[in-house]
Image (cartoon, rainbow, N blue to C red; front, side, top):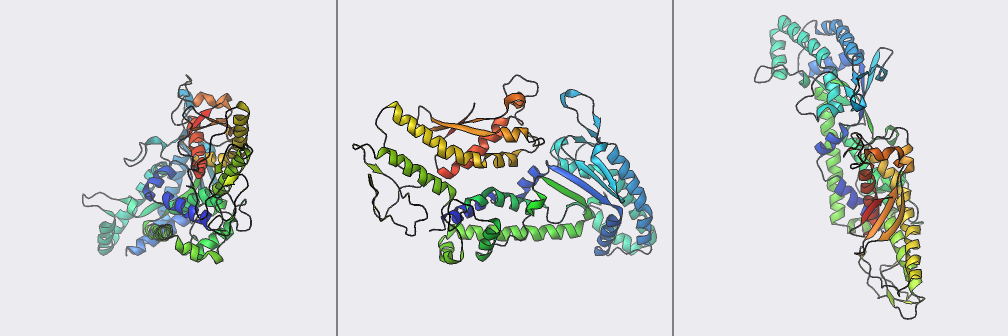
Length: 477
């Protein structure tokens, strides 16, 4: 056996974590967010923030508790006035159905279609930026509250007023209320935690069981193996909360900043350790006895494909087949056994990503046998992962997974070969009604963002990359 699958997992994680978190944040800002506001929690967070800035003017707590209900009322009115953009240029509809109030706690589900009635902030991604919508939603209510606190502190205590101004007024004399309260993600659902969970979920099926390379290593066992390798994923988002939605509430800026720094440090620790292991794979191999990794699924299927193709060719007495190692879960690194009907060079392996297979004797029958084999093996692997991959990409402004009808219809159909010898993978989906989103369809719904072919093509390429096939084509049937 080997630790090949675990090393491949680490390589892919290393690639995924290479980009800056700020780039992921822009993507996540377009996903559905639920804004939750509790007046009691807001008061607690705000007073803690004032205390951290040493703003403790006499009577401040009583004043804050006295005007907080006014902010809550204004916020409720603002949320109930939200609208939803109508498709096809129709009239906007009320978004009141997105609002809930239970036990004094307000909540509102923000999507890219929700409109606040206010222009987006300059840093936002236009009207589709969901995270920005939340900030705009409490802008007026919180602004009035914050100005009231400022005036109260100014009248009550000069020293406290000076500290308040130093903390929340910029050099141009503008009051920066955002320095006091942030839109903070629920515990464990931040950008960093979500990013780590997405990267982990995308590649975890790469790692195989030691005693059965056809089965994935359980998540719990994989996390334990990574911990033994010095990779702590305790901060990773809980899979029960998913990765496609976020919960946000108002919280003290100082505490939110510190938590963010802590999470980023944990992610950096993972990045550094993963990079170290990728650069020095012997560190993983040295701990092999304590780990549970084996051949990757791509390696196993690749070996199976090559082995069975070679088996077909060995029937031809005029053909000599030389292949790479096709033994699954081999305990030795070299090949010691000569396979009947094929030549294998002792102690060497062919390139993993580019095996050299002889061309079969001409004849339609033999080409048909190879085509059927590819469908049976490669197509099966693609379809076992395709819907999961596509689901991860179904976020606004792309097609969103609401009814599940589109996702259930996505599947790969066949593999053929182009005139240049490159593989061409066919796929299909429920063209009725989703074909209208294809660019070039002539429909008024056609959209470069919502074109179903884009996410299916990208998903297929990600899956097939484990076979090292190089250039390939996809086509919608």
